[in-house]
Image 1 (cartoon, helix red, strand yellow):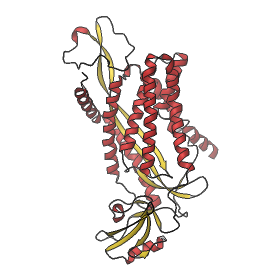
Image 2: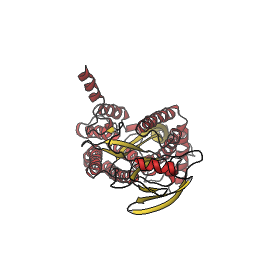
Image 3: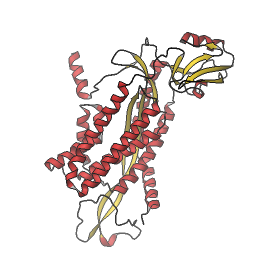
Image 4: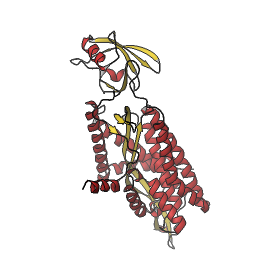
Length: 413
């Protein structure tokens, strides 16, 4: 019988220990810096930001812990070990790819290329199924975190499209510090193995390690702490933020499960290793390109309507936060019709402390009562851009990394 409870308890204790590691807090500090930069952009565009920095950092840490426990459990079930992963090869390749494009800083690309080099040239010495299983499990974990992280990271933006239009959008960015515990196979003298070692069933691990133990010793699996990080960056222009997030999570999960199945099968059927190694980078890139094309080719969702004012987002702790969702169209406030920002400002200034609001959601008119917070007279809505805004984000087809940055510097000189 598989010791599910004992394994989960061991993993939870291990990941909580990793949380106390200084490296975990360094990564969490970098995550906080990223969210702080995003808040600066929002303040420039709208004069306000929706979520507090403390809340974002706290949620990143909590979700990162959930991801660390989930990822560690899956890695343990599969039997991924640090012994033959070749991280000393994968990391330099990942950093080199980052010079071409920042989004290539991903194990799907680096791990796939290292695995493919091993299949074709026999070097570097890595266990291909182990490497690709690591890539698959990390992306399964990422897909879970994308799905459950909610809307706290959906940041309203004003985006300038390639045709010159300014449209409303949401920058979907998450960063999670990941406290992991990963198996390490250690050769121990047979007579020194303690009786309280966790007994595993015969079928475990799914991936057996290709390593012979010295005579008179046996391989013992122990848990080693590892601090990692995951990130998710996307843009919702034609979709609602949660729709875009769910689509991304679902597609990434499908890719990851397929890669994991191929990686496990390739341990038995060696000829599958080349297909699994190719799927790792090319499948990931195809997924990104298809999702982006689907989002960009559909007309933008957050543009001024023919009547009323469309809500892009709301400010936290405001009357609007309990009323509106992105895409709602405000048509009446305090009995006054709304067709411009000036109409809205006039209605807010004339409204009593308690007032009525009429708006449309998915073609259906909704009427509700609201009231201003004591001592304030603001609704707290962020409206879609009208086209004359001074601060915006410009969409660029190819976003390159350090190489492009250096070229720009030399051109300026």
